[in-house]
Length: 423
Image (cartoon, rainbow, N blue to C red; front, side):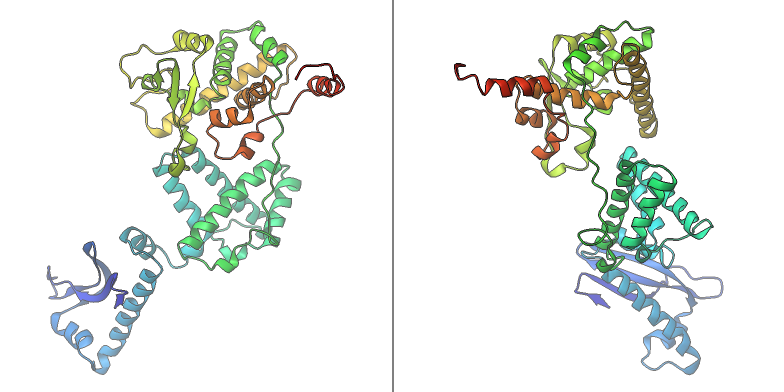
């Protein structure tokens, strides 16, 4: 059988090695002319050369061979149908489908496992962790619905009504936030899209979108400190060396365009060029390859001081700037170290902030919002901040801006009646 001359599939007697009973294994031969590749896949049959001729190579097999012939025809047909779902054909996708259990393709949990494996292979460990948490949450919900541990969840079971029940269960029964629900259901939506793209499921069973189920669009609470609070935090008396170190790295993040802690941990001396740090955000390396933009950070005296105070000795351009990671660590260990260092900063800067009456909700995430908000309040444009963040959409940047303070608004309104003021 040929699939548009892209792939050829046939039943094949593999005569390279004779078995003790003088039979040879019957296999399915899959051949692609471009690139020229042939692969053989096993069946349950072993036949002698004469039996294979009588069963497969003849047009009219004897009665005792007809059942075997029908089984081989079914195997050939099923293999061809599977190959036809892969356009353009490639062996990796074909083998993934061929060697799995029947029904795996339409099983949500199987597709989650495949997505998690792929993310881990790409070292996207944070996203892989989110997908894993999503899958665990869905299984817990099924226990709630069915009263027992689920082995399988079929895509077409998930309807808009099912998703609405899940949302209610998460918020009302488990007291989870809408943000958590949004994160989990965006992961599930991605898995749906992958399954549709791979022709595993019918697009008609897709439950998301207009007039179906819409994932909660949670508006972020603004997480920016005013300049007065930043001054208070900077001047606060640290009770421990850990609080002082945490504050230093929090403000390093703030002054370096709100740099993510993971990106700080990954900085190497080669990223410093004259008085600038130029790097690519780890978050976008795998998600924005078509429009990958470097982040350019202009180093202030404070930022240089933090590098000098905490930095590793510069042995080469490849040396990590800060002693958070090293090249002997696995990606899993690096992931844990970044997570632990972020937790260290959050725990200690929170204690310091509480001691001087600043919100106890502060975290490393606030440094990014504070940079954006205070840059704009200081007179820099939204475009400047968007460029500093390498956002492709101004709407994304606007989500980081906490707005203008009331006193600024009041002063602007008063100035509208000051007609003597120079333009």
